[in-house]
Image (cartoon, rainbow, N blue to C red; front, side, top):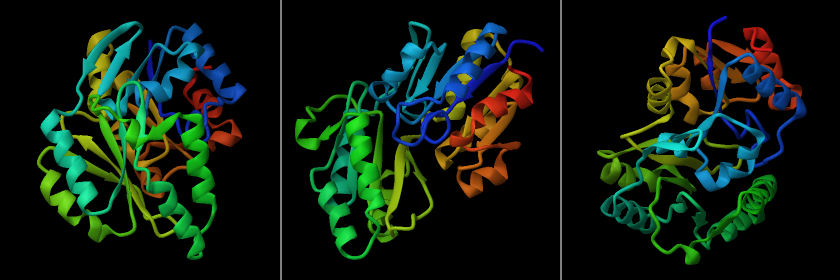
Length: 276
């Protein structure tokens, strides 16, 4: 087998969503593949600050912020935050339509102060408390700070959440020229969530940039993901896997399905490819 370039989503693929705990079997798979001469990159919607706890594990680089910030080893090969005009327009139109925002900068993330109360109100109205507990865990584990601490740093991506699709009609109309709305399915709590990503980049374009930098053909790439923000990765890599715990639509598009992150999925997927 020739040298392969392997791309791993984090949340729901390498770790449980919102966690920094990597199963021992996944670490074994990554290290075994690297010993065989393959490269293993993170390929994630997380910004640099959110993925940095995982970097000591020895990955060869990362595509962060859904493709907006890319580094190979110690070298940054792509860095594309929003312009100030784009950032201000997005912030204002989401605020006007009461869409909750989490802005992701290189070294930190900041969320609207009213967001927690929004989730608590949903629980009081009969929604599940699981979403609130999930969000509180993420804010703690990934160090998401209140919006009042945001000081205008460059923004790479925004995560958005609203009660209805109608609240997103004006933002879509205003922002669709420069941005893609990557929406997840409406969850069981009746809340719409998704991401605002610059059309200049995505995970697939990021993979192409890494391939060019390392002089590896895109046919020699393998990608593992679980959600619709992995769509461009699945469409770009030579061989794609969706986790069993992943999004239904992504499963239909991926080449193969491997077991869930909690069932040694990455190790078993690497095994299928002869990487370990």
